[in-house]
Length: 113
Image (cartoon, rainbow, N blue to C red; front, side, top):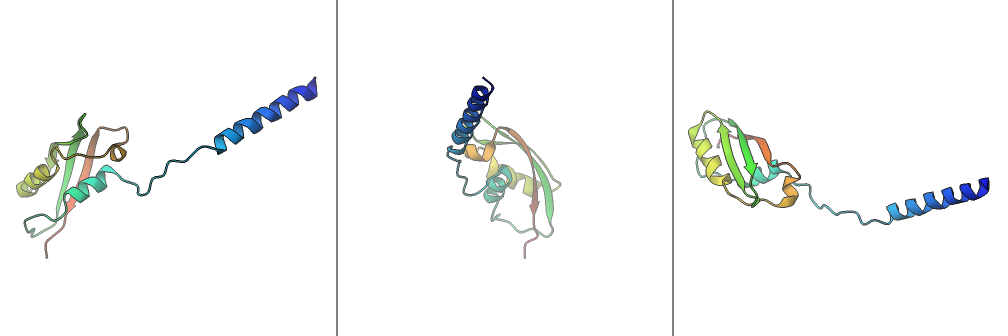
């Protein structure tokens, strides 16, 4: 009886390990994040900066997977308007989001040459 229990245990462990090893892994070519998406959307501003400007952008993703800018914390009003105009209601992919819907993204606008 003892050997029968041991045999059943060995078969169960073998069967479970074979099942877990035969899964298809999810391919993720390039890790994406909301910070990278925001960075891509804010590339190539149409104005010149005399100094670096730091900002913290508080965004929310609505049910249509669109970015909604809640606030932009910065001293430069031109940068604030630029960020709001470039980000508001832009579509993002589901892979970028994960499970979180609200984000605070730090943004650094560098000095123009």
